[in-house]
Image 1 (cartoon, rainbow, N blue to C red):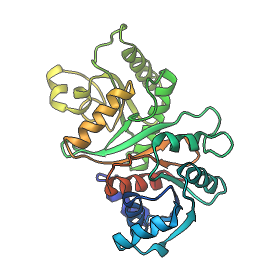
Image 2: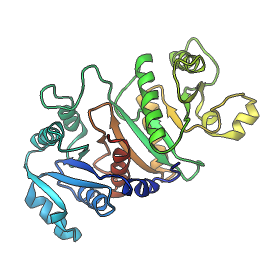
Image 3: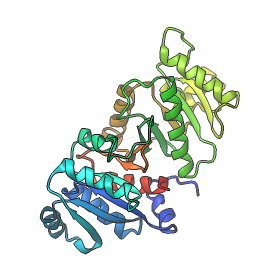
Image 4: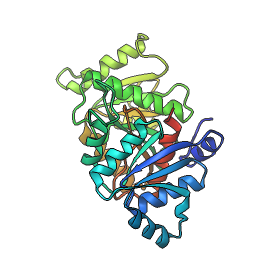
Length: 301
């Protein structure tokens, strides 16, 4: 099924066995409401690691039946994140979710060598699926939150992650744009060089199962009119399914412009760990967190 809107993931997931979600330090209303909605929609089974008294108070305020959750008592946020990872490593969870703890503490739990979720030499990256009202389909974007300046090898990993995500939402042959400041091949701009190398690898069959072009400016990647004006011949330009950005700043600014100015709906996860990890801001809405849970469930094994 080719998913064209984020809420269509719900229908797909209802037809599959439920994944088991473990929320680390789930003491806030947004996390609990999102997990509750995911349970009610038949998407997941849920374990909340946090302070049971706080969780009970939120459930009472939000009129949520606390019995739908399994609760593991822990009042400390760092210890809660570690316990959540322990549950995953014990084979009792398929998805990790960040609750009311800072991203750095969440990441440290995932990266912990003894109790974390990272295989050796793995590259972790943030992948978001965006539903922008001004674009004609869903858009898969990376990396908005983790890697400050990805090198050539890391960009190949980002491409693999967005391709995997696109396929999970039903796009058989994703069109992937390697975004740069210009479509011109400028040797003086390292991002252009990396993009051209990766696009050439794809054209020669070294990267399979997708169409890749780059360097492409953002307008050429997304706007067919700009493509026509510039007379660019590209299998990706004007109709990209996925965007791989050259650095964190450009990706993060794009993400926030879409969410704040265009009111885009988003699902966002961390890829590369043993399981998909929901990675949304503590200030994100319950809806964003619900979509992120659904996206993680689509990708969970």
